[in-house]
Image 1: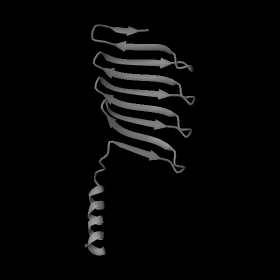
Image 2: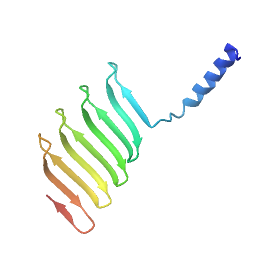
Image 3: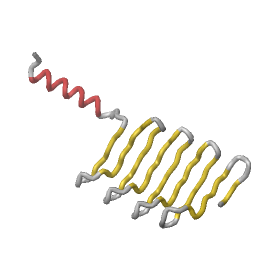
Image 4: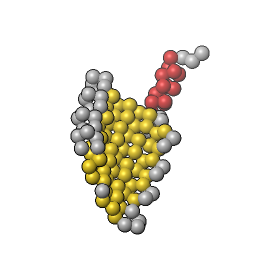
Length: 116
């Protein structure tokens, strides 16, 4: 059986190793009221960062998926307003109205730029 001193030394060594690196598939950051505000995670599609407002609504997402990176922004009503991606076909930007419907989409592909 280990002594208290030996257990304390082992705990201190473990904590010292955590100062430089945290290993996890998902990290959740909560505010002072215990509300989830940031989630950093990795799944089969790739790494993602989600940010939530004070009401718990997603307001921003950044991801680096297999097809390419992307950024999505939502308004205070939870409606998607901006989408930006850079996939294998080229970069694209979409702007959405207050109902979340695409109003403008611009793409730049290898063959030609395209606006909708």
